[in-house]
Every structure is written in C-alpha cells, then in structure tokens.
Image (tube, rainbow, N blue to C red; front, side):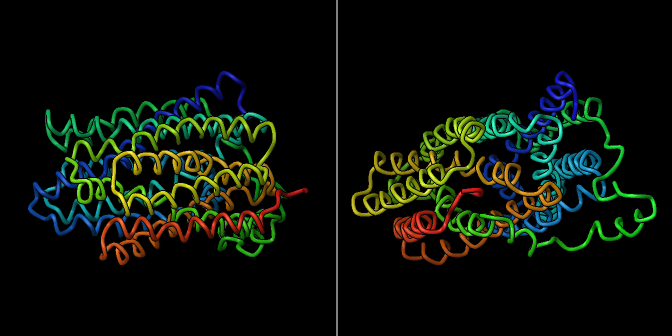
Length: 402
C-alpha cells in the first residue's frame, strides 16, 4: 500500500486517464458519426456499436487474470498506452474501414485497464476508503458523460473530428506519468508468494481460465450477477432516449442530446452517495432494493411516455433511472472488494465488467428487434425487465454474513 501522499498522486493519475477514456466513450457517437460521414461510409456506423462492445467484453473477462499474471501496474500502464496509441491511429485513419477496425480493437485495451482501476484503488488505499474513492471516481465519470459529448461537438465544429480525438493524447501521458512515478511495483505477485520450489508451478497456473465455479460459490455473487445482468437491460434504454426524442418528440439533435442530462446528474450524485453509504453500512439489501425499485418506477413511466409523449415524462423517467445508475456504477465492484476472498477479487471485478458488457450487447439486440414497432414500444418493453430485477432482489438477494 502506498503512503498517503503517493496514493493521492496515483489516484490523480487514475482520474485523469478515466476522464480521457470516459470522454472518448461518451463522445463516440458524435465523432464516429462525423468521421464516417467524412469517409462516405456511414454504413459502418452501426457496426462499430457491435464490434467494439464485443471485443471489449472479451478483454474484461481476462483482465483480472492478466493483471495478476503481468502485475496490475504493468498491465495498466501498457494497456492505457496501447489504448491511447490506438486513438491516435484513429485520429489519422485514412479511411472508414481502418477507423472501424482500430476503434473496435481499442475497446480491447480499454477492457484490460478498466477493471484493474478498481483493483489498483484497493491496493493503494485502506479498505475503509475504497467505496468512497470509487464513488468519487464514478461521479467524475458521470460528469464527463454529461459535458464530454458537448465538448466533443464544440471541438468538431470549431476544428474537426480528428482534433477531438488527438486532444486527449497529452492528458493520457500526464496520467500515465502519475501512475508510473508514484505507484510502487509489487515485489512479489500474489500467485508466486509461496516458496521458490513451487514458484514455477504456480506461475503456470496463474493464467488459467477464470475460476467461474469458485466465483459463483462466493456468497451472494451468483445472485448479484443475475441482478446486474437484468438491470443492464433496463439501464441500456438510455442509449435510445435521444433517438426517441428526435422521432417521437420531434426534437432537434441539440435538444435531444440534453434529455439525458438530468439522468446523468442523478447518476453522478448517487455514485458518491452510494460510496459513502457502503463505507458505513456495506452492500445491504436495502441498497439493492433502492436500485431495483427506481428501475421499476422509471421503466413503468415509459408506459406513460408511450401513451402520452412529452418531454416532462421522459425526463422524469430517465432521471429516476439515473438514481439506480449511480448505485449500479459503484455497488457491484464494492461488493467484490468487501466480501470476496482476496485471491478472487481481480477475477470477480473483471467478470462483473464482462457480464455488463455482454448484457449491453444483448440489450442492443433485443431493443433493435422490439423497436421495429417504434421507439416508444421499445422503451415500454423495458418495464418487463424492471419488474424482473425488483422481484429477484426482493426474493433472492441476501447480504453476505446475514
């Protein structure tokens, strides 16, 4: 564990890199659309939102094991550097196909460093500070999701989409320097901390397939995975709200982009509050009941938005869902760090990221089919998942140790 001053420097570096990565994730629809229009390959736009999440999910699945094998600091530094390099290639890509391929595979590097952020925070801070630190980090992420696309749009209008990508590269360098200079390198990896005689044998086992059976045997983890999967199907409706605003509500592109601002603000606020709550009371059933309850209420309000479309109803419903989103962004990762055995923490964190990624891909397939009958019907369909996640939490979840 770092001393307090060095830990804060490492945390600053993590925050800077997270800001850059979140900016690129939140603004992908803006700069990718501009890029593909410029290339005359708008047909590749939708494909990007299939290939990138799939590749990212694969990386998320192996990121925990990779962090143990290569060392979390080493993996984090190299994967962030590779991610930044891939973004640089995108900024100078000569055609739409190169842009698609490179931006898709940049998701692989993003997946490798994303879940290791949570493990690094756990390494450098005392256990009692973990939930608060993650809550603050997720709050910053939520803020960037609010302002990032706006900044991206301004850069594109003032200069071009290539500048909107390239402008992030110096910040990646600064963040990497903070982590490189102030985070100590683990002298011994956990998997080789036994005697020298068993070192080689344990190192061979270190990069075996993820221990799914061991993970699911951890108290409460299997139920949590089901809850996260179903909740993601509700949470993913946010991807379609701007489209709903532009079609059903006849809003301009600029106005439709602001519809989710209240949702993101609530997510930002409740990310911090969730971290503070968990630090004091743990991952209680009451917390998950709150998350699933607002998912149910928000998704049921979509029914009203279909029967009587209005900006007030759609903003209210997404703002309510934003409360649950704030909890969703913190609670699963805090659960792993708080309740799982130390040797499974990295794998548990990466597996949660993998599940969220796969669930979001499934959500995209489901809603693309349902929305053939209209965007409003697609949003209403999410109420089924809202009911399911509430019932699962009510009947099945029990905080470990109780």
